[in-house]
Structure formats: C-alpha cells, structure tokens
Length: 53
Image 1 (cartoon, rainbow, N blue to C red):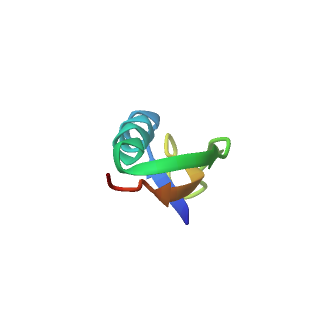
Image 2: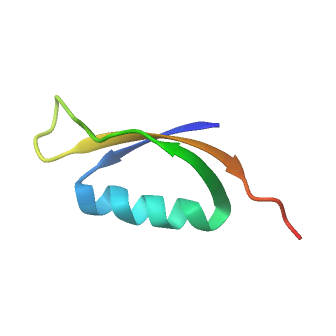
Image 3: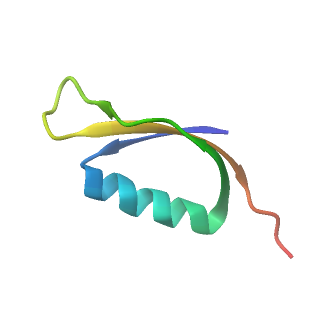
C-alpha cells in the first residue's frame, strides 16, 4: 500500500511513528516541499499491515 503524508515536519514525524505501530514500513521517500503551503512537506511510504498474532 502506498501512503502520502503531508504537513509540518513535526506532524510528519509524529504520523510516521504512529503508522509504524500498525504497519510495516518498507520504504520512505525524501521530503518534498509543498508548493501551496510554506513550511509544509510531503513524504510517500510503502507499507503493509502488520500480521496479527
């Protein structure tokens, strides 16, 4: 599954931490600046839901 996260750097870091609790993250792109909002960035993740035990 491919996921896009956008926001401030702090929001992206927080979201990435929380997503890793429920998903296995295989790849994280570099941060791209958001053209519409200064101080906002976006990253793309490749993930898969964690298997439940």
